[in-house]
Length: 271
Image 1: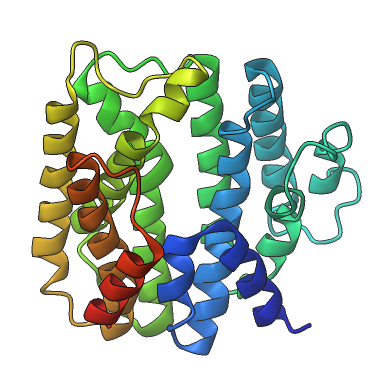
Image 2: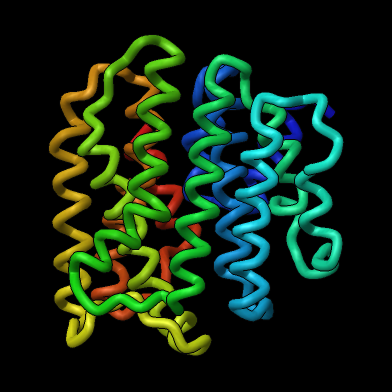
């Protein structure tokens, strides 16, 4: 199995939203964005794990951050392998998480330090939210959370494109892109989150306010990204934005998620 095939296989198993646009990117971008996404998803699977307690989640995230900082750009280091962090949790964690070191190793050398840095930061930020039981009281808290887990990923994508072809992407738009998609996830997963005792709604917020928050950030992202000249970048973000907007419309009508036929129609229209 080639490196690209391996990345795309696991990507397809973990993200319907991002597999479709990533597989349409030029070859080197497929591998780079695919591997970077899997690094982020590896960390995310720990934060969202349905059976791990918060103490274990925080321990894993902090320990992974430490191990990545120790290993970054030191390929001969023998005493801080990432794999050792998972030793007591292998039966509980999915493939995408257990293979974090593989995804990091698959990122091209020129952009690898930035992906390592983003993954380290993501682990630390998620550990913070786990330790604080995802307490979101104000819109500022919500902004902080959505930046931590999604807006910052948008900034990483900007850096990947600058490395790839010199394109300078609107970085504020990239943050709005991440915030918009994450807030749609919050709306879609609200009942599931409530079942585990977590709410990402600021205190006193209604569904209407969260819908308005999501639409605001999606519209801001769309307005800025429409002016981006890099076609490959548009290929990556247009489909997730269209799916996010359609998901909001479906949720407002009482539909729990988009059907497969709806997804395929949106993809065809965005292509």
